[in-house]
Length: 119
Image (tube, rainbow, N blue to C red; front, side):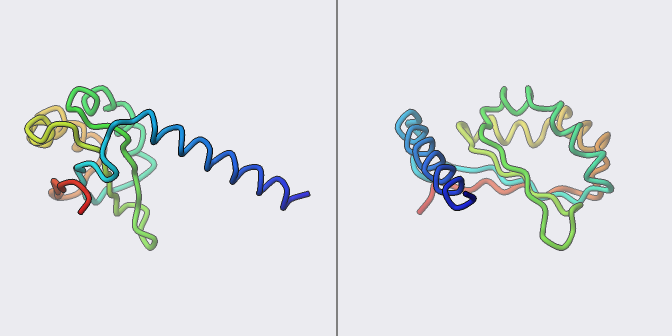
């Protein structure tokens, strides 16, 4: 039944999590780059964000998560694990990112937060 399915799903999720944590040598809470931006239209913003993946890769940004605030889908946060602070800072100052944000309909100035490892 449904409960059995849920139990299997949870068991699978736990197994895959433990495998991932063994493979990755990253600390429990690695440094993060968090970008906060207001966008005119999330549905227009998202494909342009996705298309900019190679620039994030080059900047050493991995495992990025996109979230919106619960009351506004256009109030967007992106949090990425940051391998190299200097590269991440260069990425946030790059023309490539500025152009992508402009094309994607980012409103006003984005905020960038460079967070150290988990404490």
